[in-house]
Image 1 (cartoon, one colour):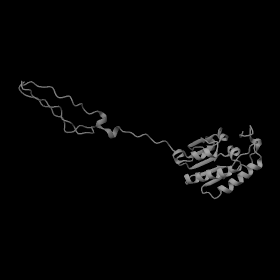
Image 2: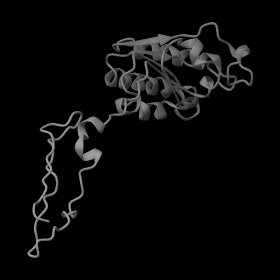
Image 3: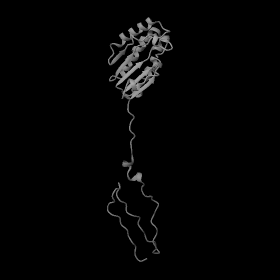
Image 4: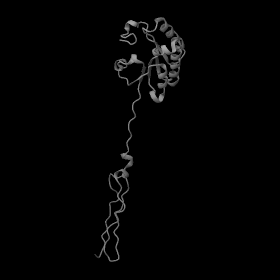
Amino acid sequence: MTSTETQTLPASVPNLCLVSVPPPLLYTQPNNTLAPPDTSTQPATNSQLCPSKLSSTQPEEQAPQVVLLADSNGKFLDTNKLFPGKKVLSKRCSTTGQAMKLLKKETLKSPQYMVIHTGTNDLHSLRKNTAEAVRKMAEQASKEFPDTRIVISTLLPRTDTPPHVIHDINMEIRRGCAPLPNIHLALHPTVGTWDLYDGLHLH
């Protein structure tokens, strides 16, 4: 062969993210034969060409608008009826101690509303100190979620506890929680033991 053919690429190639690369060069060996191009370097892959276009981010999960912390009396609550159109996060907390462990922003995010119904199961272990435990729980909720409207539910009646004991504890809860900012109380004056199907839980 008396001459070496050359090949050129257009100055720019549409729809590519990198500048065009010249083709492999042909070189002449001493015996005037053409050697094949060097293929030790592989062409760039699509991921190398357009890394910015191929990268994607996953959408973050929507934070709950309402958080419901409840003991076993919340087992059969229909959150769609209670909070229609709201994204609700419901968590079980049998005692005030369990509720305290959940009252963290990394767990509950920053909801608009929070309803806490617990404390009745503390009666046997804490007795009259249950009111103080509920107050401390409400205080932590108020500090951790200052921009959330928080509802603290007072204790429901139980057939294994005299009604006047629960009444007195609820009065203490009212006095203890009254000074706390963004805390509201839910009272249950019309609920009695006749509303309990097993003496402990609501119908």
